[in-house]
Length: 375
Image: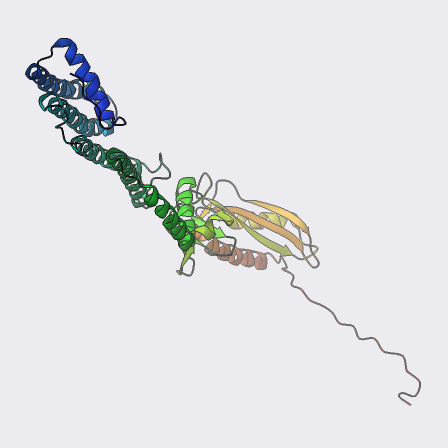
């Protein structure tokens, strides 16, 4: 028997009408149709359980992760619940006289089905986020710091979709609500402009990873130190004076950042300018500078790549050299420069290499006698 659909847009009525038509082709007895519906629903549910447990899970066990196993476990529940609800609705349509089925019966069943699917969506998002955040090197944007953001965004999207579906199911006119929500969203956006700017910049920093916790960075504003924390709102660095500097992500995301440990290794090259007096033996100066580095007396200096000396130019009062060597980590730059300069000074003094300093000579010239003066 076919029934008049009181809500033509309802997918539930469309499905049950199609099934009712197929049942009419088998038998026209209401009790027989009801029995067929109940048995078919039970068998279909068991078949789905068997396919899920025996076939899909067997395939999922061959993968290296258990994510698919957990998703299959969660997916089985809403599918079975939806199948039972469809069977219940179809049986009620068959058994009750035409026109006696409450108009709210179908929306209630669809709302219950939406509940099961929303629970599945929440759990699926949680499973995927946990897996993504546990592999930060593979999924750059998903870090422990960004987990709450993506978790809340995912929940809001699911809640919004469920609310929209419920509105469609119950045929509620939500035009006024949507307009109010749009105005409220614009107002909140203007009020939290800076917060949202820092938030999005933080997500992009975590995704693009121009620096990481433990890196030594130098900002275009002059701050230099070790990155101690990267959050959604701000980044913190510890300077060499053991002072923590907190920088909003919108500021650091739009500025120039020099990551001193961003290369293939943490090693860093140090440049030490040295000036010697004119007339000095250039070969001896170069040898002394290399001996200072290769002698092994300077801690944290790396022998690979090898140190080198470059003659850079003729200064106003000196011959300008530059000693270039590599250190194991940027945090030792100041200490290594101090030790190198001290060792160079001792080596030059020992070998009578003069280190010139700026000086000016003032010559006083007698002025000619002027008429009427000095008479």
